[in-house]
Image 1 (cartoon, rainbow, N blue to C red):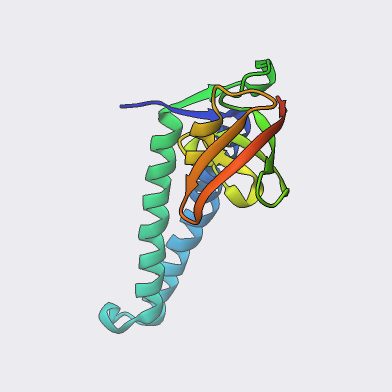
Image 2: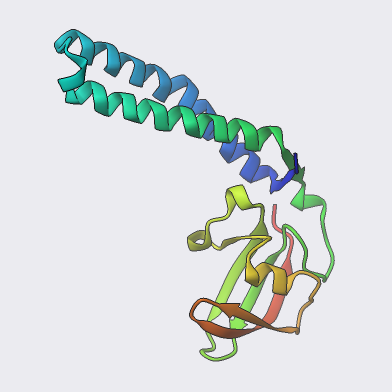
Length: 159
């Protein structure tokens, strides 16, 4: 089973979500199911029961997924990394060569990737193009919207 590299912050976020789902959502859904059964014993036509049961299945599936990811986690301590070369955990400031727009992104593990928050997976096309490069490099990336070029303006190691 392959390991999943992730930052300490990403690992903590997954742990927090798992705790929420097991300690709060799981008992709440069980209570909803029991209440729905008490209100309408005909389970086939009990829409509240069916809805709560569906939510419970989704919650249990997510719990299993989180447990699997956490069991395979390889925590990379970004605070202990340094250097000018881009690698996992680096926070990179880029300039779009076509528009001049600045973009800041951190290269993280797949479970914690959130492009809207500037966290890109190490396996994404942009991260793969950046890894091994340094400040001043220009990288070309194939995106669904077409080819893009970025200049690396800064490489930082934020905790």
